[in-house]
Image (cartoon, helix red, strand yellow):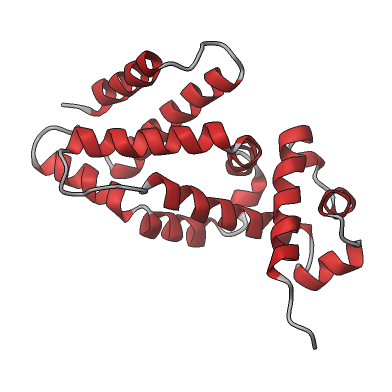
Length: 193
């Protein structure tokens, strides 16, 4: 048996993001994925069992990629506010530069797909985002971050980044350094003691 082509697999996953960006996750079909990826439906089934598995793998792939970008140039020894701003800027840049993936991940998290492997995904999320959990815990120990569960703080942080990026993409407000700084200041005020 011939080994599977990783480029073909990547094209299939990318097709899921493109379709979600254009039509929404609910409209993604095997036929649509095959067409965008330029592979026969039969070929797609060599790589994935069904649509649910394609969507699950697409989520895992984009979550890994986004997490790697979140922590690019991250320095855990930097002051907490500075470290959080670095994560914020990395997340914002990722969302602004990867529109289809951003739409996909947002819709995935609001869909029934997330429930298929929720416990496993949450465990993986916590493992991948240990630097952020540790940073928030350190801030709480130093008395500068509110004493809330880390998942609540992270949800607030993530939601604020999502709202800012959506507003920029939809041209509700123009991207500027002042906007980036002002949005982070709002986040900081929300989690700072």
